[in-house]
Image 1: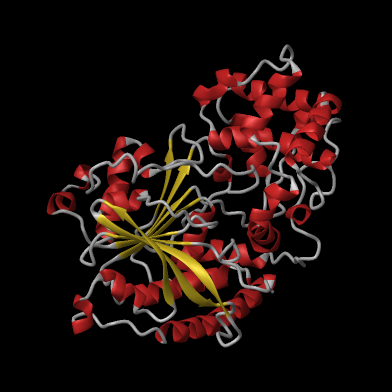
Image 2 (image 1 turned 45 degrees about the vertical axis):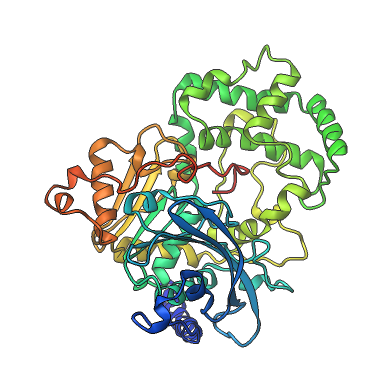
Length: 479
């Protein structure tokens, strides 16, 4: 039965890919070597059918554009409406490789150079994920929010820009963006010349989450684990007094709780996030900042929970921007559930399913075969793919693995790293190896690196502003 479902899913995807490719072919860009190709890069980009300029921002050594691109709401039926999807483009030179980045969420509009871009000294295209505002069709047909439609968005952008940026392309992204880069490769394996996926969860079996429980039994040190767990437990012990503070906080800020159902549910959701969020965003060196629960006053417990997991997150106002994520978690991506034995007798709700964080008027149905298909494809067909994880990041407890069918593909783990793990944080030997492979995939490896990969280094000089990488701090159950 599973084989039959996988065959049927693949057939549907192939039909959809043909439609997406046909849609991309309608864009009219100047051919490389034509008279039009000598015009200003902005004019060449805006000559793409459906592309429009929001603004251009100056940055030394680059051109930086914020753009809109008209995309089909449904790539299988392009005639049934379009929406505008935001793109940013950091232009270096058409003779350089291009890095295709997505966070899996909103696109930032401040120039940033992602790690693969720093390594290969290339151009960079950033794409906003469909249904994250303002890149949301109106009216929103939520059934068109799935990983195949999103991959087809990327494919169509690539097909349009490849005629201008005709050198090698590398797909990348962190967390949900790493997942997005992986799904794109699964559905359109001929587009990219390499994939660098950072801290990408792989919840292949949504009902089996024991790997997370094992992770929390061993992460960091026992002293630090006990300290974090004690604050989490104490927050539920003091539920009455802390919820009184929460009511005042909500009233002062105009927060409401219609989606999650009640202030009590929101309070517990924030507290249950505390342990996960600490290890996701913090380092072992941050343990001294955790208060001693038994002697800490209420304000210290409140301040620590608020700083780590955030009391605004499960309000209607906090949830609304992330409705697309929770919808996907409850329909395709899956979401983790952990046991938290130290909270036995105190937790009233446990980890709540994504359905609790999406307005009830939006229908949801989980499709367990979707992640199974991706996992199977990566294990057996991955080619020139790299996965980078952090040793102390909870999301890495369920990670992508490579089977015998994988070619020139790698899984690296950065020692002691959290959800911000990157190539720079690997051991020196693995850092050089990963850097060399990225340079090779991008077609810009110096001769010295080809002769001796251990000499591999980034091709750009550090830039404090352009290379600034903030971990997008979000509620725990969001990769």
